[in-house]
Amino acid sequence: MATIKPDSIKPDSIKPDLLERRETKAPLPGVSGWSDYRAWFVSFVTHVSVVVILGLLWQPRTRGTGDVVDRPAGIAVFHQTSEGNEYFLSGGSAGSGESTGAAAASASVATSDAGPPVSISELMEDVAGYASEKGADPTSGTGLGEGLSGTGTSGQGKGSGTGKTTTMFMGVQGSGASFVYVLDRSASMSEFDGAPMKFAKSELLRSINSLKENHQFQIVFYNESPGALTPGTTGGKMLVGNEVNRDRASKFVKAITPLGGTEHIPGLKMGLSFSPDVLFFLTDAAEPALSDAQLVEIQSRAERSMTTIHTIQFNRGEATNDGGWIRDLAEMNRGTYRYVDILSLNAP
Image (cartoon, rainbow, N blue to C red; front, side, top):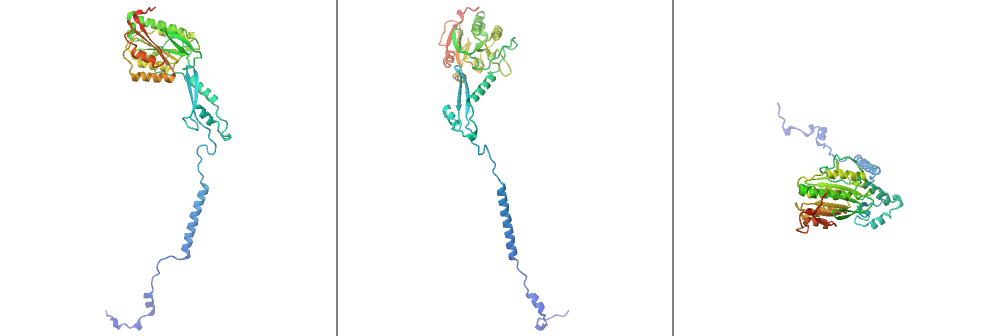
């Protein structure tokens, strides 16, 4: 192969078009003018249009009552006492801590857009009707009255008795329309040929027989556990003092026999679960004594139903003390305490 020497190439022998191709430079990438600006403009207009359309289509969801003026609301409280039914209206738009008058005043400012104001009298009738249908719901116990003949007519809880009366039990007076008798039936009540239990039964039936159809009553006997006259799956109810129920009570009481030990609290709780005006409590056992905490618990339960608790203590001989916790139980619940000497009883 022949070697070409650089100095042997003559300038005249090089073609001009080759020189031009070598000197030609490749175009640099960049913005191609108006076409690129147009694309940006179209994109901008499109996005703005989408945002505007979505804004027109979106509507906030109305919560609550919207533009309707809300009615003032409150809590109607229905409470039954030995003096009759009491009603309280608390809360309302002005706050839950206001009195009945303030809540009623706030209810009167509702505008015409809110419709007619709520009738408090109608509300109270509904509440009273509901309470009368529910009745008492005592703690379940042994069901000592189960299987007795006679159905009677169940009462409807505290306050359904329409007439206030005064009855006697073991020499203690109790005034109200509904009465519960809670009696100790532990083995010690059979001492002295059963004189304590016989006397207690006699006085109990005497008190119940003094009641009329516009009064109510219930009986609870207890030892380690309590049992009421009218047991059931959710507990018994108060009974009206008609002839059928008095006869039923007589059969129930006569079937009771003293047995077992003593636990006072379950019997007291069952008796208070009926929410009576008056509770008569009888025991011959100072032990086990109720602690201060237990006395306060019973007092709290009694206050909720405005129940007065009268207590009777059986013991032999003269009283050796002032009654201890049995007296305290009565005094803490507006009641009367009485001590009865077993040796002095003249049981039938």
